[in-house]
Length: 404
Image (cartoon, rainbow, N blue to C red; front, side, top):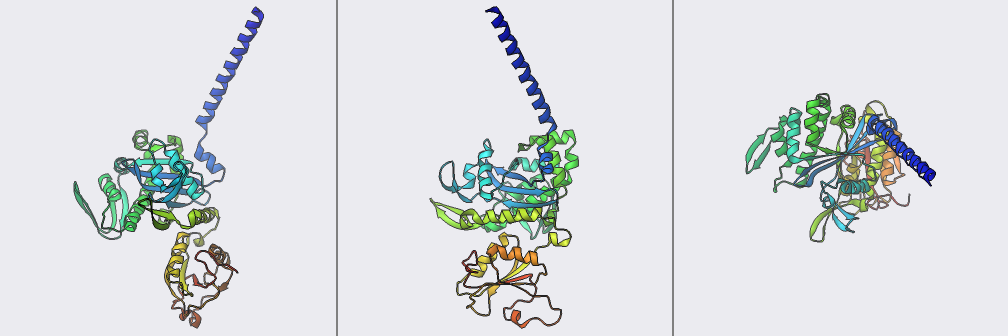
């Protein structure tokens, strides 16, 4: 019996030693590994969710997608009023209904499902702390297109048009301010402009934020799943982003009354935004060199059918994919059987990508003419200025061309 007890004791000691050794190895590996470095070495797009919250709810929610190999980024704005089938409660409700500062992963899960991506990192900033961070960054430069007045009970601020250096207090009021008389799009656009400027400033000041004292203050003002080392690595990368060419795409949809509240229901039950994200990711990872990489292609959309408003709705669809729709209107007649795309871009592959959005196979190449504009285009009131002219025919169902 005694021999058995001794053998069991030795066996137990060996197990404890092995567990301790394994724990030490795991701890050392954790300290040495950096999730950002792993993502970069794996040639993957890095997805980061930024949330600016007020009273426990997001007033700005942005997904930044970044691909280091091309130094390109894209940003998607997630409206709080976006209506989805919330899996946790099994009903249609606002996406921000699931937001809980203590359970951020539930919100991230809904955003992941909406965009069909995997968000690896998040940064949550309360509105009050936003002002403190801006002061830590020594201000943020924001371009204000028209004179902007902030009228709050506690203060009245007038910001002139042009480039303004906002301190923390002004930045907080600028981002948080809501005027019930303003259109929703104005508030959304203003917050997007600020976020882009804020992101740019974080990149510019990343070296200063590496100072231990500044780091300690900054880390205390954010809620994130990134360690100090990971955050520094990530923002070293973000410093290379050309924010002047990085637009923000808002998730679009139709406004509907659901259960006594007005919700923004994503187009085509959410399939459209997923397709836009897929194309955006393809654009980020496409190693195109030169000026073509940064070019925004322009489109004229002309309605060749009797369906009212079809050109406008199609233009909104194309803007979601990042195209600059410079005009909409009616074609020379409303009896087009087939949808036609006239390509003046000079890039066959680019034209094919554009055509694939609506599954159009009727693409006609038109080389630019220095002298004399083709009479056919003058009939459509197009000034030969766009890369593509889309003429909608009766084979277009509002989303795709059918029966090619």
